[in-house]
Length: 194
Image (cartoon, rainbow, N blue to C red; front, side, top):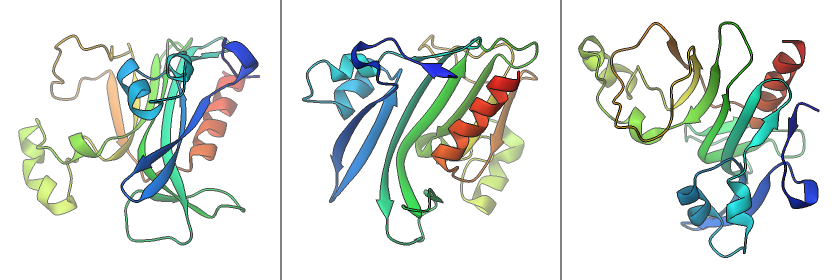
């Protein structure tokens, strides 16, 4: 076991159906914020509070995740579509992240994947990237789907700290939309061999 979580019933994650627009979305969550809990678990008793409990990672700290996704019948034009499994060929992401913190590794202290359209739509703070935003259609320093590698970890709390131009201890690697199963399994393999 790589991931565990200390909540009643032994559930690794909390799940819920979330209605957005004309579609139902599956919410898979552990270690989310109280605001996210109120949004995605509005009428489910104590499940919103349980969804705030992060997963423990054997020998490596803690993990939180939020996947809001839905199965779709065929690959479509949206950039937030990815492959999933042999039974469900494609899924569409509404919102998502996976955050691994307090990693017991000599170099990497934090690893995160984020789906963040809001920041991707913004202007880059790095002035030299501003012309590139119109070429690729989003902020190149903050792609909609990206992996963070941090050492030391960047504190996610609302401390008023604004991101400056890239520090040497932070890599935000632009990637396509990952298969969430493959993302979690590949991180689990890395953790088991670390």
